[in-house]
Each structure stands twice: as structure tokens, then as C-alpha cells.
Image 1 (tube, rainbow, N blue to C red):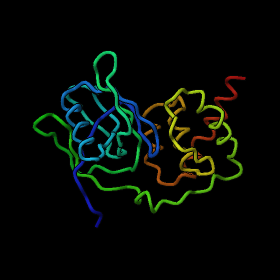
Image 2 (image 1 turned 30 degrees about the horizontal axis):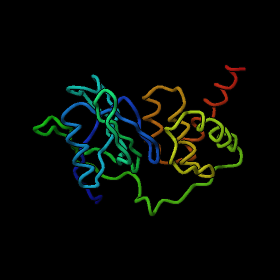
Image 3 (image 1 turned 30 degrees about the vertical axis):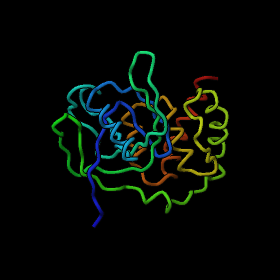
Length: 202
């Protein structure tokens, strides 16, 4: 039986992938306290896609599968809000959920992915090398958000995840891609979207 554990959850209108970037502006007290605790303990929080309502106040619902986020940098923004930069680490599934006394969403979760040390790269098939070439060109044009993220352009998991992050597709489809465990299946799913986008700009 899979080991389960408790994890603070941050429902957002975004889908975070392992090794992906996540900049956030923190202002609600429950999340400021969560960030302080994560930084003090060197722990992560879970990012899950909002399925009803907004990011602030009560959340009507959120996806069962999310990704842990580790804080890698923080700063005080000009508007006096807390700015943090996170990296996605590992996918999980929420088995049970509740709200703590301070309003923080909590979940009993289990891992979907193997431990990072056990992960092995899945080679990107030759017929999809154009996707890696596209990322090599586009990511530097997106500003500093991908600075510090090691490129893995031969890894189908890495290439697929980065493409889903930057493609203008709806959040439900991004979530579906997150939940796909086979990176080659994800590549096959998004490759036609790249071709279609290219045709529309010709």
C-alpha cells in the first residue's frame, strides 16, 4: 500500500509540472504563514488546479492530482507583498481533504511519481526533435522565468511538460496532460497543437 502523508495545498488557476517554474505573489495570511513554515522547515506545499471559485477566499473545489512546489527564492515586492519563486518537484494525488482552523487547505496525499532519484529520462523520439528545437528558441524569449532551470532537451518528459506550460491551451487540457503518466503519450497529444499553431501563423 502506498505511503500517505499530509500536505498543505494551494489551489491556483495554473497547472504546475515537475521541474517547472512558478512565481507567486502572496498576500493572504494563511498562505504567508504557510510559506514561512515551508521556508523554516525546508518543506514543500502542493499546487492544485482550482475547479470552482477563485484563488482567494473559499475554494469550491480543486483537482485531485497536483505537484509539490519548493520555494527557491523570495523577495519583498514594491507593493509590500511577498514574492516567491518556486519549482515543481513531484506529482501527488489527494486522497482526503479538509480545511485547517486558519483556512489553509490540507490534504492526505500519495505520490504519483517515483522519487526523483529513481526517475530515468525517456528519450525524445527523433520524429519529435522539432519540439526540442522550438523550446531551445522560445524559452529564452520568455524572460527570466526559466532562468536556473536545467534544460533537458533530450528528455520527452521535460520537453512535453515545458511545452504544455507555454502553449495557449485551456487549463482542463493542461491538467489532463499533467495526469498522463506516459511522457510519450503526452508528446503525441500536444505535437498536433504545435503544428496547428504554426499553420495559423503562416
